[in-house]
Image 1 (cartoon, helix red, strand yellow):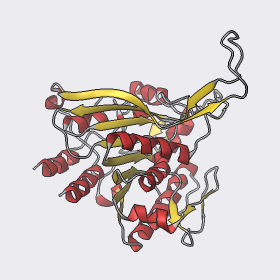
Image 2 (tube, helix red, strand yellow; image 1 turned 60 degrees about the vertical axis):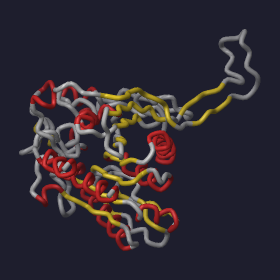
Image 3 (cartoon, rainbow, N blue to C red; image 1 turned 90 degrees about the vertical axis):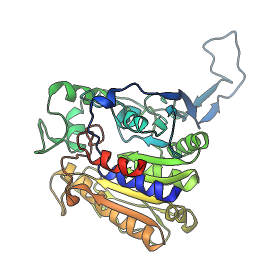
Image 4 (cartoon, rainbow, N blue to C red; image 1 turned 90 degrees about the horizontal axis):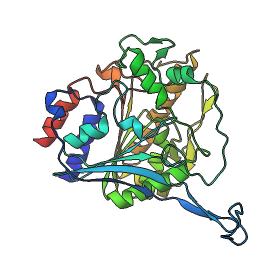
Length: 353
């Protein structure tokens, strides 16, 4: 029964949208809510701490590389909570209120009886204490993120985009972008997310973009991960030794997309749980001179090989390219804008029934 339930939950993500009605604004009944820090390490300076010298760093410690987690548990909850991991340039804000003020995935699933755990990954947002140094520069990059998230070609949104076409929403989008406070490290992130599952117990991991790579590693590390739904994974696809595909050339600044090799033993963990991957609109089928679109073309191609490899080893993975099944208007940033259609309500009604 639990397996059927998890697979049904995986399906509902494909349709990525609630129609928000007045009933969605009814009071929420929450049994418990709060926040905590998960995982992380401690480093210590050499020497001996002297409490009389406030400028002396010797012997002092630094707690860092943990995840920040906010959680809410409804009065009556489904067996598996949803654990949400954001992508590049983002924090847990991804899953909260949308740029145009509607409820995000965190609240929408809570209203329908799912406990939710929303993560700020290590070295990002409210988990900013890093054990490695980094330089944060004030570079004007708003248009870079607009293009990379496939919202359109600045300043115009793509035709049919579901992102709200108003200046106030765009302002909110730009202001939720946040920098790394230390180097991006998939292992550091996976260790922290694994610690979140140690706290939450069995659950479903939902990742976005750059969070995809740490998501695979978390599922390998922790058996509490019972399913993975990955929205547009953009980093660190893993394959068993001897089966890593040839790097794929790309017209973005990276020039190529490479997969990572892991042991057959580790890869087997990914064959034991349902995995579903989604990509949205405006991704070409062949090489493009548009760097942002080509950036995502190669990731879809790698995702196809990743899914094929999992299934070849006896797993149950699926890749869904939404426009190919008639669902349009979903950019790489379709998560905060996805609450417009009634598809998800349809799938939830089947699950609840």
